[in-house]
Image 1 (cartoon, one colour):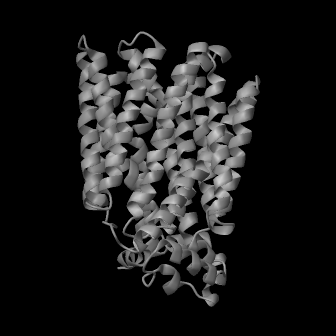
Image 2: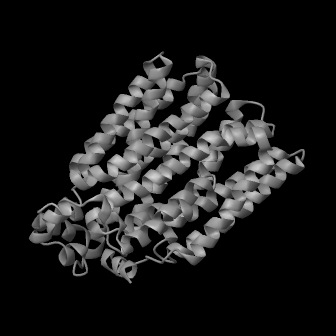
Image 3: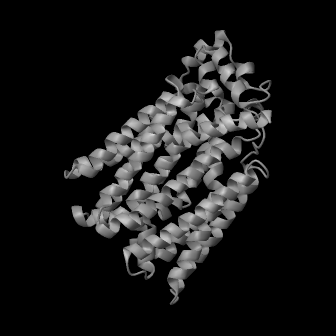
Length: 446
């Protein structure tokens, strides 16, 4: 019973923080259905449509870097408040402006908030979790992200019937307001407090989420003498041999997370279905929502397994499955059978569910686990920055790749990248299941 009490505390904190993950998924996917109607209203060319999709990524790139560093300075919780404020301003301006420059810029501000969420939330949850349950709790953020995508698809289907694309984005503010209120009821993380001369308070909070704190990095690493050094950490501290080894793994996983093609489905799935023979945008959105529903089911499987079988097995099976289904998708466009939409549907379902089971959850989780306490925010911010840069490159190049090389060749290219991700997962990624932060740091020091 006592263990359940600690888990329930951690679960509540994780659920509140993961609303940011929901907003992350909701706003990145909202453009998918709305783009068809926005392009008509603003008379956007293909290049301008790519730029509009990518502007949220430009904002996220900046937000991830600033958010990670800011969370080490002012705290994880306070940084999330700033992210919500940026989201409110960006969304309201986005739906009311008629100026094309302001329209694109406000989309970037939404992205700025999403970048902060993506960098800070996994760390926040990880630092308030027992090692035994850390994988499941951090993965709730990924589950909420996918739920955000699904709800965005559902709202798009209903609102776009009446061409009210603005309503999709405004509805998301309801969830932002809920998160804003609930943030007042969750604590700052023990690691941040310990790094800022508040060790007694840090231990007090840690005792609410862990039955045994004897192996805590807070007890072993934090003293009144070293907290002053920690608060003045320089960028050069990120490149010590042990941190550099962690960076190679964390950053490479984040690159593969994006360049294997998952956000092609998030941003362009309706266009892919329309190109396969689906006749109407509304029918295409039903297909997209079905894929997202399968994604949610696969994410639930990942949450169930991640602390049982470990990170590596899920990562390896995930990248293998992604590669296989992309090869099927590529072959379908090359052969062009009469029932092509069915092949596309099955391939995209298999691809996204394979991603959700492993790479989707594990990449965020490992990056929240492998960096030292005193630079965790800044380090994960940089890794997330690279994640969004990779996302940007894929989002801005996909339509051009399809235009120049065709659907079949484009998906074959992404299948080859999945193969490289599979090899990297087998050879380089360590297992962190059940390990305390201290045990993980000892591994990298060796």
